[in-house]
Image 1 (tube, rainbow, N blue to C red):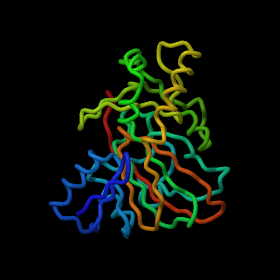
Image 2: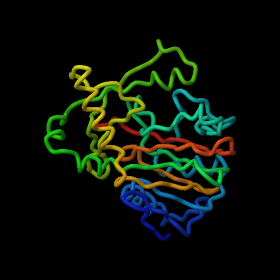
Image 3: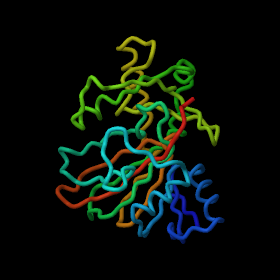
Image 4: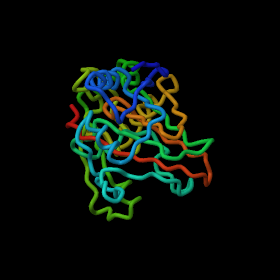
Length: 261
């Protein structure tokens, strides 16, 4: 296994067939995941069972709380191109932060991708936290953000009355690396607890800008057979469209996690 750094975040792991991993490969893959937060495997030939087997390197494969999985594999969501109007991931976010224990890892595997467009951007929330203004960092230490699933619930045709909220720290400590990361996501955070709405909005706008600065980002240009795995505890991602009506089909799953602290 060889490692090629991709930028301020991310690494490509080469000379690996993920369906034929040795016992020696596994700790190196897991350590690379912690070291780089985003790991890329090119030219893989994976069926749904393979994908679920690989996901066990990070935890139990989860069934999405809102979106339905594919037949016989409810943990895997198929992402297809239904046109830019219905593109739902064109915002910076970590996955499923509206749960008490959000997933540790997301796996996204490309089955068929367009020649142009459809890139996924990844931003290091370690760097976002490290570079944050010291006074703001101090004033927000110990503060909680209120996350909600109401947006994704309405998008899927659910009843807004079924929406739920959960509180997570604005700055999350990674349970394995011990490093702190910014942990607010525009897709799911509604407010900062114990602040009035105007002040909450002002600070959140600052944090969202901080979370997605260009100098923290790796842009992934997809090819067929790519598997990208990222750490939701230290990464936000953004899925671009820009490929019109071209075919784009991906398989996605997430793994079990723990309550942020």
